[in-house]
Image (cartoon, rainbow, N blue to C red):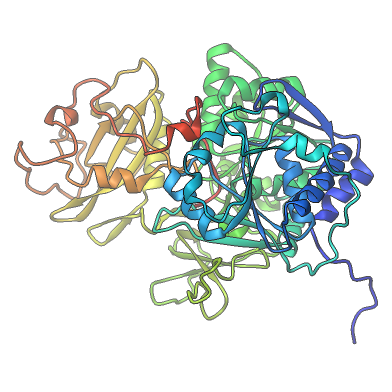
Length: 601
């Protein structure tokens, strides 16, 4: 016997329909690419999205066609999302931080029919236009006054909308219809496509709206610094309209001063971003004496949250930090470190231990830990194994890779993370499986060392990678990017770590670099670092600070390495320069993405 309830397909057009009907006057504020602040409402975005749907139909876009966006977080980008998905086409978000060759690969692999782009990225698309044989139209998300004369073949977003009315039928298709496409960053081979359905996005929205997850309400003013090309902006582009929260879209300016200005002028109460963004904001606040008068909560994901960051937000500005974990393959929210009843009863310092973990899974996410023999491990906070995940918004297979099985016999997806789960249900990510340091048969967490080192008052950013060792197989190498005008030597950081980690975890060497490279999702590019430091020659470390696992015999002074011999010496400060990850300068325009990014992969 079936239930006697109405059948209401869970398609995302219903989200913006709800926002129009019940929160129509709520503002969506954008810092536009052209410069001025633009104010609109959910009601206006709904109407313009329908105009966009009609425009796409006029361009020959059919259900199932891929329509790409290469754009910052703005109201126009939101209109494009709902306009594309509303007619059953697939919104494919492109990551502008990828190398041009990767972008071309992704566009061609997805067979994108139309690309919506901001002015910032038009030059790189036109430069590689001949390689994009599948693309029929480029639409520039601007008005006629700002359309560049150099690209007459490109269409103008505002002109296109003006040619069409807002009478367009949305939905009416199966809720399992594909809605969105997002590719992983390709850190291990070619990027892989994750194809979201309307149903999975809708369920993910319901899941994230819970009080123990994002908990966004109609009282909130939401600043999604996390970009819309990062796995649906962690779902905020759906959950904020669903709740009726005011949205503040930051556009391309993500430096500390610009983010602070938006928070204060628009009364932002909630925001989400990766740790590097918050480091820029905190540095700006310290330098200027600025305050956070309205902000109460931030969600931080993408990489482990350093303890000093949580303390700074809590103690200096009264802002609660919630740590989140997820990945493109989980839509992306997987867990969040909101306190349960037992943790909430603890004092602030005890709670901090749990806030630094990646948190508990919400409804519709199931997790398990397994060892190398696929045996399930206990939730005792001690057993460490591979983290696997299952749920209705977790990937089943990669786009156009049906022959590749990615689920185990029980339907769980291997995240590639190494973790433990405690008796309260909180997961602690120890490392990425490919980043964990295996020394003398034991594991060393690169994440834990770099987060502790990042708390050093002179450190702007830190990274820890494994370097080969003749006796112990691998040993940790600590890279430090100092704050501007700071000077330091190795002993300062080794002494800072002494007593905080096991002696055999102590890095074999510390190298100071001008920049620590970030990958396409804003995370530290350890693959690049490992390649550049694969022949690094360890210099002698001061007595009393060497690890209990002794070093191998010293390599000869003229042994090959990535930098001149003087680069590894303990002389003050900027001893070496680590080449930044190769990004297309034209792609980024004048804006340098020094630090920003998302959820996993």
